[in-house]
Amino acid sequence: MTGIKEQTSTKYAKLLSTAGFYALVFDAGYQGESSGEPRGLEAPHQRVEDIKSAVSYLTTLSGRVDAQRIGLLGICASGGYASYATQSDSRIKCLATVSAACVGRMTRNGVVHQYSRENPQAIAAALEAAGQWRTNAAKNPTSKPDAPVMFETDPSKIDDEADPFFRDAAAYYGTERGKHERSNQKVPPQSYDLMISYDSFNFQHLIAPRPLLMIAGSEAQTLHYSKTAIDGARQPKELFVISGKNHFDLYDDLRESGPKVVDFFISGLD
Image 1 (tube, rainbow, N blue to C red):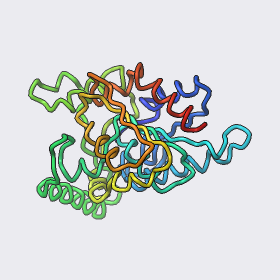
Image 2 (image 1 turned 120 degrees about the vertical axis):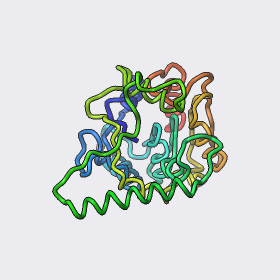
Image 3 (image 1 turned 180 degrees about the horizontal axis):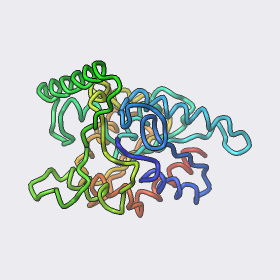
């Protein structure tokens, strides 16, 4: 969510390319250099279709890409979207995720933490905001209101009492680690009702018998998503937890996650 191809995905793609893989990175619809209005829209099922379209494109690269050996790597929310895509697209022969998350559960719960549960107040607030945004767009079709920011990108504005997840986000998106002019962290509220009934991991068992690797940091507030997804999956599967790392650390610290991903695809696509 809010990420673009020039950020973490390119770091992993370069590592895979160095290891001898063809690696395709792309901006999802409404994001980065891809088209689509409103900008920044988070539409889960469209994101899944984008992934499947990328797989379709790879199958056309005969002589360079073996269509029977296509693997998928998803990071953060794309780890959830990649899971959903793999569940229903047998052309994907193995799946790896890093710091995976489910935007549907985030929206329904209102927070990302392990012990959060479906929150009726959070759901009502999200649907109210989505409805108001859509109504205003219908009444003012030529206007382009500024969407709210998902993550504060100025670390100096994050106080000591702030949720650690958002403090870690600012340390990535607001610094040279992940700052980019096309990544403004804005998500229009009409995304909320698209996310509210979506779930990345309900059918994780459908990935088997294809190999599944999920990587997360031991200190990541999102670790529970990977744990739940792995619990719902069938063999072959592996949860690889990296000690001392938070959700955003694995965006640009590939010292442990990178070699693990490379080895996984070498064996999973053999």
